[in-house]
Length: 131
Image 1 (cartoon, rainbow, N blue to C red):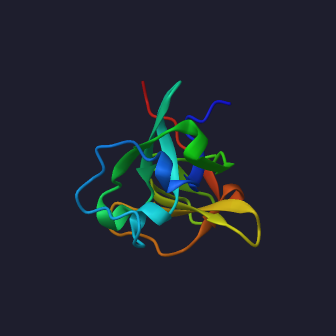
Image 2 (image 1 turned 90 degrees about the horizontal axis):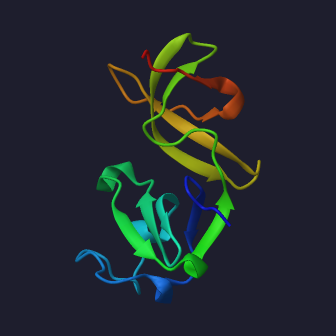
């Protein structure tokens, strides 16, 4: 299965590949129990980027069998989008899985502030960068 740009969680912490960041204790809770986006895929290793913007989007490596796939989001962190009903543009700074609705939702950073409003796929459209 192709995992690049997929969203998920670490399903098995025994499959995390050393070196493990110093601030990580896999026996304790922390950002490593949250959601991740696969940013690099190799046959025997995935590089996961945390969706935790407060920690600076840290990365961790894991064996593919240790990744718990949840879904593939329409937008990823860093995508430039337009919020349709506000006619405003910004950049996705956080995305999450909505377990009750079973879909992704996003947070947008505008030039002057970070939004605290959840946006769903239908609320946004991708802005193509000028060539």
